Image (tube, rainbow, N blue to C red; front, side, top):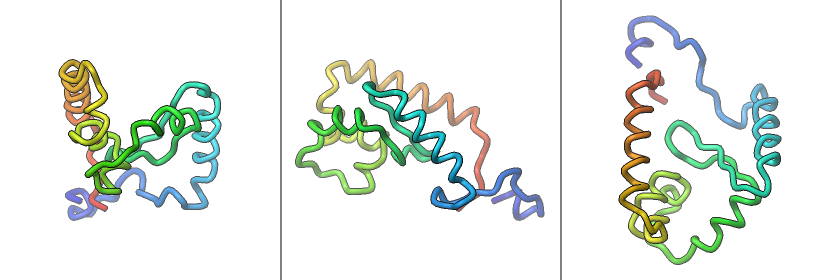
Length: 119
């Protein structure tokens, strides 16, 4: 946003994932997801939203999708789903270790990430 205000355009524009010019990217991601079978694989956007998954991920995570207080938006976000008390957190035996490692990775990624323009 600051760069745009100063008259500089971002190096790469942000596009909707359904944009026709991204067909080759979607096909490549679908191919990668299929190649991971029988192991679960997810494609997560920069905000932590799960945008694609393979069938193994559906099979593995299905038993954990029960009655919950998570909103639909939060249930589709990997971080909300992991950290929310009604999400995956209740099934993770070594929660403290898992959460600590994940928080460190999030901080590391945030510190080294290139800022995106506001949507």
